[in-house]
Image (cartoon, rainbow, N blue to C red; front, top):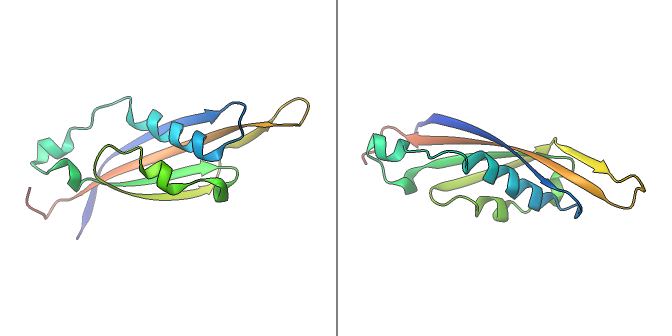
Length: 116
């Protein structure tokens, strides 16, 4: 299977007070996806489930992200989720908590050799 990327979407998400890296990552992916309507599947005659989405999340503490929760954001298609060091953890003034900022890149691909 030779996947052909057809779109890349970017987003940012935060968890202001909770310090939850998964929550920020989920919000970043939603930000990337919910601002558009990708109709490539229909345009190419493929079922929407044939979309392959590679999600790359950047957060300060990658080990704290539940990749299953991030993948569950996608309404259809199959996902691979990669979490890397990035984003920011911004400490509160008193140092007792932090705000998490996550970045997401979602690359949508299709197997162009498959029949729809």
